[in-house]
Image 1 (cartoon, helix red, strand yellow):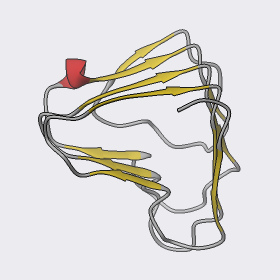
Image 2 (image 1 turned 45 degrees about the horizontal axis):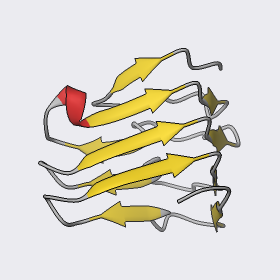
Image 3 (image 1 turned 30 degrees about the horizontal axis):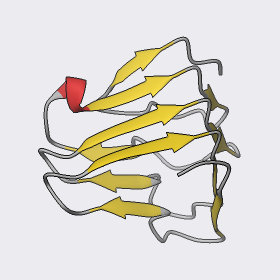
Image 4 (image 1 turned 90 degrees about the vertical axis):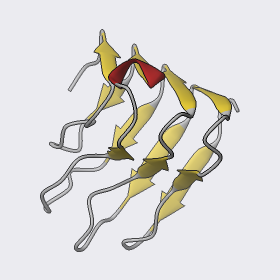
Length: 100
């Protein structure tokens, strides 16, 4: 999936990767959530493999929590060369060269 903007003006999930054998690549995507109570942007099933390359996560989130809800192996979710200006951590993932 490339160059897609995912947006919600509330606490809905932006993306839910629910199939535990899925492999998904997000390249150059924008994830924007105006969270009120729930900081989670993306929910990822244990076993799924998800890669974020050159993506942006924004704006500043004023609620606690991680951007990803993921209970699987840390190496199953890769975040590479992304921008995170939310003030929150990504959560359970391998993060390389991310700017804040």
